[in-house]
Image 1 (cartoon, one colour):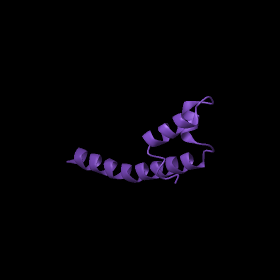
Image 2 (cartoon, rainbow, N blue to C red; image 1 turned 180 degrees about the horizontal axis):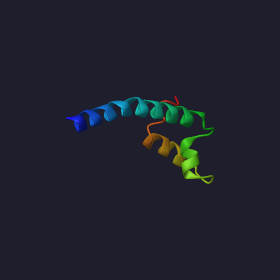
Image 3 (cartoon, rainbow, N blue to C red; image 1 turned 135 degrees about the vertical axis):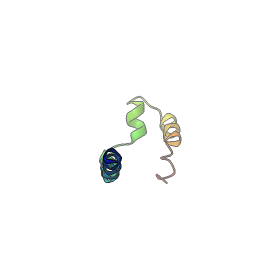
Image 4 (cartoon, rainbow, N blue to C red; image 1 turned 90 degrees about the vertical axis):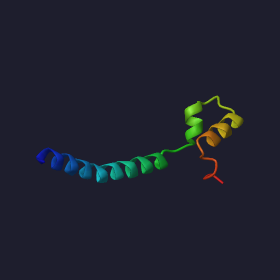
Length: 64
């Protein structure tokens, strides 16, 4: 029973850690300058390729 309590306690301690890490990563991505699709495709990307990548990443809906 001690082992089960330990496992449950550790799992419950992981929940706030996952939430905090998710929030930190979200804000770090938002603070990065530039367009994520343009960075992924490189400097020679065409506007059509960037638009296609934004559509695949579902970012085009938030950019409107």
